[in-house]
Length: 376
Image 1 (cartoon, one colour):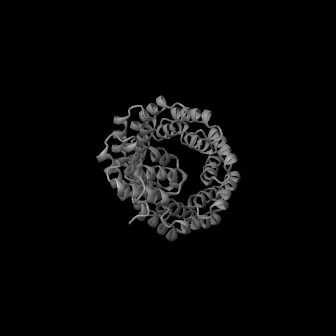
Image 2 (cartoon, rainbow, N blue to C red; image 1 turned 90 degrees about the vertical axis):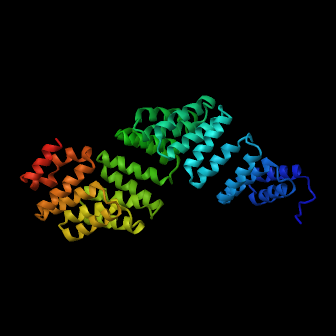
């Protein structure tokens, strides 16, 4: 017999809510389950039990508890919204989207339901559909800076950088000390190739939150784009100091070291990146290119092979592999690689292939000339 069996379910439910608010989840779960032993038709208890089970990552049980609550009361306040949040937390984004749509149908003026639907659509990479969801959320709650920020993220992901910047500006009017907002706006500026503005935002982000590793990495990236390589190197070193296992910081440090002509040090940085993550295909590619620069063609080809084993259609590795073949006089293989990279990403490589000094010894090859003509 439960120690709670002689208590009124309503009293137990209120106790459960108090424990839930106090984040004492084990005690809350005990109360809600005791409620349901006394009254199996207590829909709100089923709903609250679901929230606690989700906290313990018992998602399947949590969804079953939500389903029971909604079977008993399809109009349970926040029932569909909470179910959507549990699906989302579980990584079931399509199911989450369906629940959020049911929540909106139930409460069309729920800003949280609209914002949550937007989040689900962003996660599903349906960015253009997400934007109007955030618009609706902001109609009902114009002070929700997270909806402005998430709308900015959706806009940037859809390539609407100017609109994204405006969204982040609005978010920063509401939350001017939020490091994440400066970081995200900096990312939008960086994608827009506005490196000066991006640098200013990353500076603000690390000033507000000095241990934000990603901001130090992106700060290094824009400094490198601005040809301030020594400062970029310092930024990557700061990221590594904060997180020695950050593979992208090591990889990017290698890129800067190569630009500074320190090829051996660059290879050592790529090696560290690969110790952190052996599946970092970009580091394998960059390592191969650096080894090619040193004339270590066999080792370079092995690195390119590793990159392409991970991502077979990685155009940059195929392009660099072509460069490596060209230096060895393996013209047919070199042109095959260049043709493949052009096929995979004509926008990037059509211009590069015309001007790249690394491919100068291919310009007399008729197949290569035909490629230049085809993609001109």
